[in-house]
Figure 1 (cartoon, rainbow over the protein chains, first blue to last red):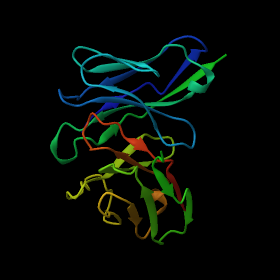
Figure 2 (cartoon, one colour):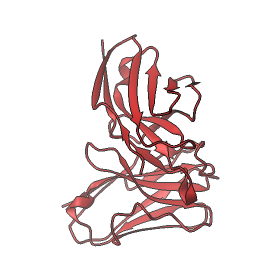
Figure 3 (cartoon, helix red, strand yellow):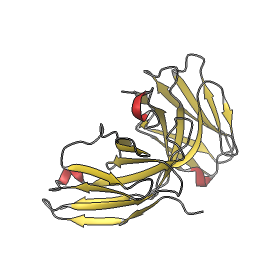
Length: 113
Length: 115
């Protein structure tokens, strides 16, 4: 099974970039990297995903190292509303349910004024 | 459009009772997933449905857990003879095709408390 590890918590000042790391020690070549976030009592919200290339959307940027063993989620200008638990996840390598996600334990990001 | 909905939002039950949790996926999504989230933990995969294919039940923790899905619509997760360790938030997600490049859309979850 996939093994993803994240720091348990991080702080960031409002307006600064938040860089959240994730290690993907067992990732294989065709497993996608996903990032979700979860605000208290809500379901996870999709942020971004990628396979090999760096990705950017209106919410965030995703940097994946060349060996794919680590990824970084970047929130370019963090706001107080970005305070949440951020999860990295990997899809299954193949087989009958290759879209299923294996989640890390999450990083609690606190954005302070 | 409507997102993934789940009911009930909260369920309190006594140990040993059976419970049924419901998930309504986004219309047209062929793939449906159930996950469990224990307090302060990440999400654990439970079961996956894809169209009319046999479901992947590899994440179900015991034979007290079962799930059904009729076609590409509603799914129910049933837990028989509930135990206190079953207390968790049960999350349902759907995606258009189940392909790994399709994001999953999550419902708000059902918080189950077993007394």
